[in-house]
Amino acid sequence: MYASLLAATILLGLATRRFPELFPQVVATYGGDTLWAMMVVWVFALARPNAKTMTLAGSAIVFAVLIECSQLYHAPWIDALRATTLGALTLGQGFLWSDLLCYAVGVALAALVDRFLTS
Image (cartoon, rainbow, N blue to C red; front, top):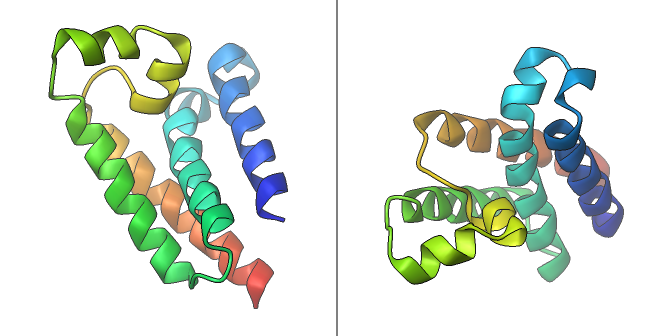
């Protein structure tokens, strides 16, 4: 189940970046970051399938905030990593306060889905 959720979330997230014209403006603008946070929940759920929903959500939000805060750090090695497609998708480009809100929404949505599917 988590692998399917992960795959669907990644595909939808990439679609919001590749084909933004197919989505409402708010989804095209903020959907990728929101879905990225959901993806983190699914990755953590795959790693610990018996973990409680709140443990997954808490771990994911901490991870997401740490990744966002890491964007304030600019050393040549990490900026070179961020310049790659995979690095940009994983680590992001630059710190944005709005991303933190997107992460909170994404983790909350994933927690609701997880709670619904596992209850």
